[in-house]
Image 1 (cartoon, rainbow, N blue to C red):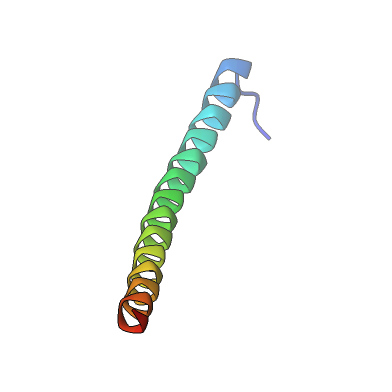
Image 2: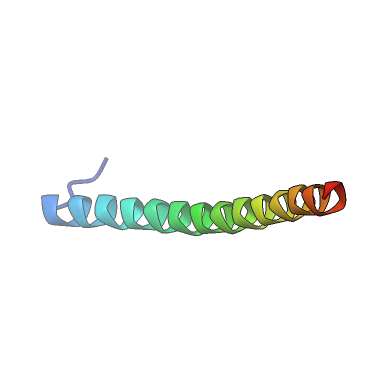
Length: 54
C-alpha cells in the first residue's frame, strides 16, 4: 500500500461511512412508508369487519 496521509485515509473512511448511512436512511425511509401503508390497509380491513358486525 502506498503511503497516503492520515487525513486522506480518514476522509475516505468518513465518506464511506456517510454513503452507507445515507443508503441506510433511504432504505429505512422506504421500509417505514411500506409498514405505514400496510398497517393502514389492515386497520381499514378491521374497521370494515367491525362496521359489518354492528
